[in-house]
Image 1 (tube, rainbow over the protein chains, first blue to last red):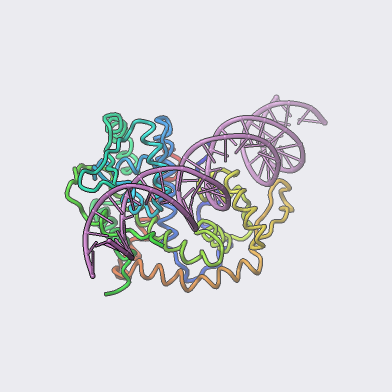
Image 2 (cartoon, rainbow over the protein chains, first blue to last red; image 1 turned 90 degrees about the vertical axis):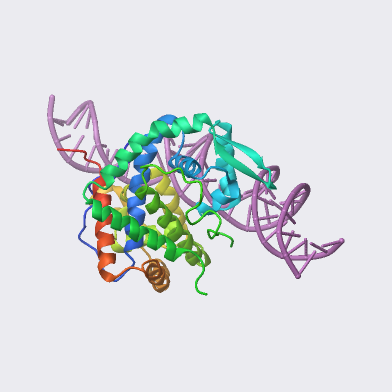
Length: 161
Length: 161
DNA sequence: CGCAATCATCAGGAAACCTGTTGGTCACAT
DNA sequence: ATGTGACCAACAGGTTTCCTGATGATTGCG
């Protein structure tokens, strides 16, 4: 394994040349990296990556998305998402069918196998999130989610008018 | 461009099959993805990626880290980090020298060019973070940082004892 | 009808990961 | 002092994820 952050570079070291530098974006990235590392270990036995798992959960919530919509949701190009979609399709976790109302698009749905795979992971993922939030009160968790949603909205494009 | 999340898959759509599913890890990931997309656009003219930029900022705060320490900080293997380190070295943004007290390790430092590159990006990065936090009060920003740090700590290895 | 926008996809390539292995160095306990 | 194990860097070889650029099919609209 040896993936976990050991003790050396953690904590607050000695030679910090402090400044009024962006710190919150870095804090978010650190939490995301740590969470993703744990997620990767959880889903590795199933043979998918944390990225693929996330895409599957998005499809569970929003059945019938197209590959292009999925790509925008993850801030990648349609070509990048196509790689992952074909991989998931080859594994039999999703199926695609022509949109009857828009013959350009292929709508993606989870297969039974896809639903089952997600269901098997739910408990572990909930436990992981619970571990992450263990130090926070219910009130603080709600606030955190609210703050994060506001950050996401603020970063949406559409600078003005 | 065309990288920004358009309006279709955003917002709260119709067919949400809601459940008590992990939501905060997903919220964090979404903010990180959005921030990274913006960062990538900012540093693209300089010819580095958001990942490389982040590594440089880590080195600015902690001069003299080894490649292995850097790897742990980013939750990747030493081999993965080696790719990026050699890229940054080839570009003249960092230098490596043998640790006099531990002849295994190579300590990494920013070059003048590396420091200058970071200095040029500081204003834009601060502006980006300000935009992200525009909707939050000072108090809420402090709370958000505190909550995130607690999440990161809770995800650190060392389950018990 | 023509034209721009959108979706999927092919081609080719770069970046960022990985496993596995080797050799050098260090700490520590036989 | 001699293992032995942990650590660091690096080489080899490979996969996944992402990119730009181009193509063809479809759609909506002026």
